[in-house]
Amino acid sequence: MFGRGGLKQGEYVFVAQKEAENSRIIIGRIQSMKGNRVHVVGTVIRPLGLIERVSAGKAGDHAKQVLGNPDPNNCVFMLIDRVETAPFNEEVDQGTDRVIWINENRYLVLDGWIKENFPEIFAVALTSPVEEERQSAKLALREKMSALYERDLKDHVYAVARGAHLL
Image (cartoon, rainbow, N blue to C red):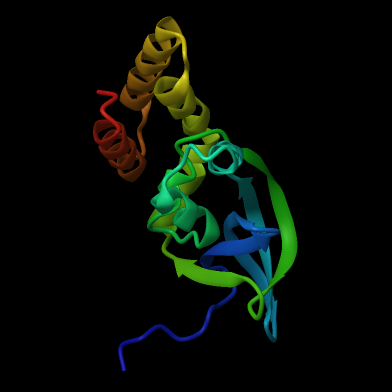
């Protein structure tokens, strides 16, 4: 009775797409729909850092689970390490790819996270073997966080930084 209907043109989506044994994610807006085919315009994100850690055996079970089955709630674990991004303007198939509706605020947080280069900053702050680089990244993170105007993004970044003990 209160559930959402199907997806509609103009709505925001999070897509989990399998690539060999890993997944990549797509965030974007629906441009059109034709049966199970959904045309999405947005950004494709491949979590290189997490893939490398899992391949090297340096990641736990939770990281493997996130990599194999990403969703809008756990994808932050993909986004605190190096990522490869590219514009996305293609169709996805709801029969083979998981297409999940997200609200505009969630989309703006995820998109802002990528555009503000937080994956790279977090990666250096958390994994650099050189203490000076880690401290420099933490300083850059604090400066970038204080310059954010988008409230939801700022709250999200602060929460993740606190959880990672970077503040």
